[in-house]
Image (tube, rainbow over all chains, first blue to last red; front, side):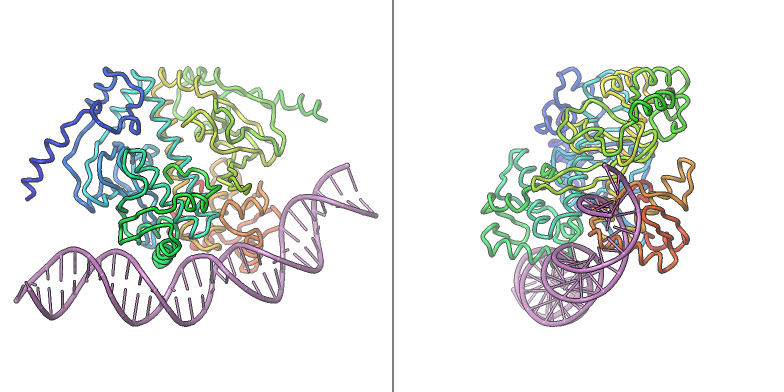
Length: 249
Length: 249
DNA sequence: CGGAAAGTTGACGCGGGTCAAGGAATGTGG
DNA sequence: CCACATTCCTTGACCCGCGTCAACTTTCCG
């Protein structure tokens, strides 16, 4: 079975940055063909990651950024007393590994939640490329800056919002992110467990479960295990009104 | 009075990046004299900001980073329903304005808590300079990346820690940041109000007040309004054991 | 001196955490 | 194919940390 998978996937990953449908979310935004070729050369395309496989771990020497082409990742860090804090989820077209650029090692870990294909971009090569492509430099800054505002939106959520508002904001964030890559914004599958959701939102798993039940009871959602159907986008939106950064959370 | 202040301060701000004692915290880290001169040329040195004066506001077109030379800033954003979320405090040697690089406008506001002298560094000039100084480019990425890991440490704090642990972590963060710029790590003055602390840590102002009283009662601190003396660094540390990113919060 | 802003302290109640028990889906070996 | 275990999720009962409300004190500043 692994052998067969290889064959299939070697084909499917033979894609250049130019062909990738995620361009406007990923780094090459606004590049011309020639520049894209250069970027294309430094990107390493791995065979697909298995579910539960680490992309990198906290403390690993950091050498690359990773762009998700398909699948989903969970970023987290672990405290000394052993428990885990989920920092975020990465969907196709999004980038992880930014937190490794400060001191040579990743500050967090990143693990796949489902089978994923991922592009690796070594820092050094990116840096060199930035020297010749000012546009890339700016785009990288934009990505990093976006990450900061996203995290800050999350701070607001955790500091000021009720459990209900947090879950609503979380669902709307997923919805809009799926929509922006051409998928349905009403219907989608959660790639992560209740455990992960609760951890991420600073809530007990039981609270998450109760809220899903409550949302369903009030006609906001239809929930079946990990399948979500948003029935009343309006009211869901009104619950998080005033929350900044609904973009990615 | 404003006139007099002007005179005093024109003298005190006549300093080049080379002379600045904050070099290893600020951008010029590891630059040679010639490179420093170039950076020096693009830095705009303002006359001191008055307490309560905005450095920039959310929504303003973003053009520059700002390095704090003395004083202290508060960064915050405002929700649609009017309330404020404090995102962080900026001490001398630290930089704000990173969240403006993503889409041409600042996502947060920054205001002085006390009289402050601040260096302004326009993005464009920095970008140009990065083309000729690869070291600066890397250093900027490091600063931005650091900001991300800091915010993520804060997410952990808000998501998983009790009120007690949050305040302890906050005080230790201030302590180590003051120490790293040559001040006492035991004794310092809080530049911010209880209001700001509570807002930042996701706590009610009354809770903050009670915790200060409790810490004092147990011999951890001496608190007198905004003057803090840390009496038992050991035990304070043991309260936040396991929290990541105690560096800046 | 008066009025406002900042900080402290006590009483009370609720949101959501914790504990416990019980489904439902998926995997595993016989 | 079925017993059985395991993981994930749900639901109920209880209770505690911290937010809310309110009264008071202290400091600040004209």
